[in-house]
Image (cartoon, rainbow, N blue to C red; front, side, top):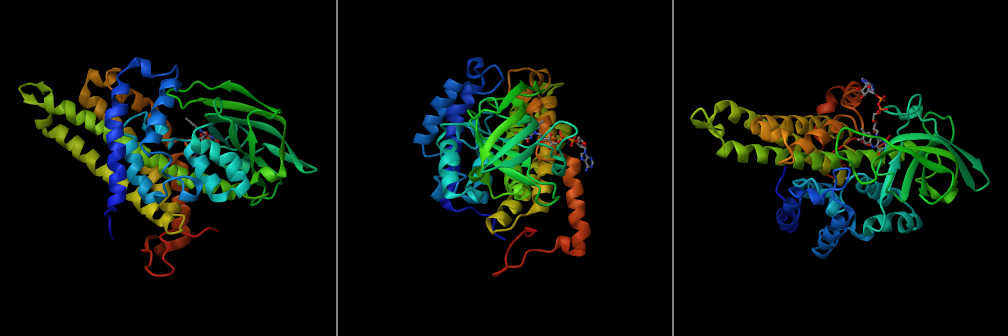
Length: 411
Ligand SMILES: Cc1cc2nc3c(=O)[nH]c(=O)nc-3n(C[C@H](O)[C@H](O)[C@H](O)COP(=O)(O)OP(=O)(O)OC[C@H]3O[C@@H](n4cnc5c(N)ncnc54)[C@H](O)[C@@H]3O)c2cc1C
């Protein structure tokens, strides 16, 4: 097993690290950098995105044929961590959720025509996007088989009605991917529709207030009442909605983890820097064993998260799905992020609770990590199901050679 990275990737990582250090970190201490929802303000975002594009650090996640840098999932794991050293990083490099996951699924499953219409404008940064799946009770949340939004065929069109909520970015999005029920078949009852914000037949009911900082466009509740979508705008084909969801959420969970590791490392960085200079009772905090144990433990937990992410990324790059690894990474990294920022606040004392560092921002943001894209309990249930199905083979190593897959196969 080889954990070394090629020189080209290391060069890209260093360029991202340099950009974050010189361009983005200084912005975080300026209140004027933020919009009303605690994200980078749009004028500054445009300016920084132009600089990132000029520097050739843009949308690296897409394959070259779709206008990206083709670094693969392993390359993304290396680079996303570096981007997320800054709370503004991912969105500046066009690697933030939900656009990131939406672009990847369009790239994977879109027809050529769909890619040019729906993917290219997100890639260039001309528009933003949203993925609309979750519904309020009694609709689908953790369990997508409960989705109630309906799409009824009428000639070449589907007419859609229903309700969604917590749709990230919906208030600023132009391109939407919407999960709706096209039949009651338990395996092939869902389809994924592409629509533009200017189409009639839907509305934003409200922007839901949340405890943490918000992505641009917030988290919205949507109502559909007669939205018409042409059958050519179904992603992946009729009845393939569950497959689209798996293809959308698997990689997106992993890229969440990559970014969260960057935020966890940043939290440790701020704690380490303070502990090195803060004195109390005659000694530096950094010289106290209790502080050293806290930081050492975090270093180990973050590295476990990186290994889980890297193993899943490696498996996906080889054509596998790495479902168990993605679920494990999602649970572990979400909790490590929480732990890292909580301990970093503790080590920083009152300063940690203030807005003088980004720790309190990260702390409020971190709570969602254990819920979004599958709550911890759901991922544990999934892992247990795979253990029950695979028995002792659950722990087998992938074989080298032509069948090398490094992950489970699609079923
Ligand atoms: C900040 C944020 C952004 C989001 N963005 C989007 C988005 O862009 N698009 C989108 O479609 N959705 C989005 N969501 C919704 C998110 O994906 C759902 O919240 C998540 O899938 C859980 O669904 P739910 O909230 O309906 O929880 P429920 O299904 O109601 O579950 C509630 C709780 O029950 C427990 N639980 C559920 N199932 C099990 C089980 N099998 N075993 C044990 N315990 C269980 C868990 O603790 C879970 O947290 C977002 C949510 C948040 C908070």
